[in-house]
Image 1: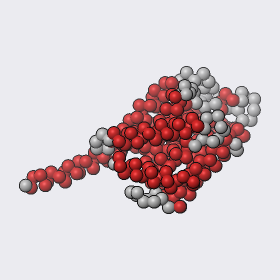
Image 2 (image 1 turned 45 degrees about the vertical axis):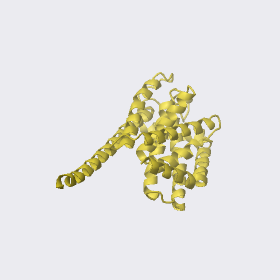
Image 3 (image 1 turned 90 degrees about the horizontal axis):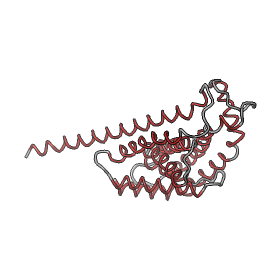
Image 4 (image 1 turned 30 degrees about the vertical axis):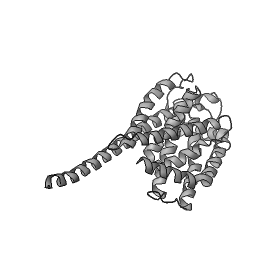
Length: 276
């Protein structure tokens, strides 16, 4: 009778080791994808030549991005065994976030998808938050035939919004199904404001090199390096989006988090518990 009893701790230890390994793989994939995205998004700031504006590289970047995102999702939700319910939850959230994005199309800065992305990322954690943001952008682009040079920038920026929300949620939300405190909701709303502006900066990078030509103080200068191009880019963003669209996005997202944070986080906690 001692052999089975001895085997149980070994099995439990093996299960924990498998979960830890899956967690490390998921984090590694998210980190790898983020590094690739940062290099791609930041390239105009240090590039020696004007990038192409025709967007022909965008589909290939999506082809590279999508498998990495899906691999990170699988590693994050399977842990020690396949979990179709967790994958289904991620799929439902991605579809809802994509639908909310479509609702805000054409309304400058009014983008309700970011409210759900921040709250879902906070509830699910950095890896799944990253995956959710990227998938939501990819799904909505495919539904609207919106695959263009802007899509990789939007996908990475939204992925980072979700991942950052996961880090904030890990710090401020109670474990299990505890009710989130008012302080936690305020912290997430404050993060939503910062994330809205960061998203605007990241997505501005795709068209800034082509927007003004080369004759203004805000124009992109190929090969000039960070010392010259970063101030130009920040001034361009301030003039074109930070004080307008990005501010509307920040206010709408923060207000949504403050108004709906507790019920949405409660629903996500219950759903996560059922799929665990």
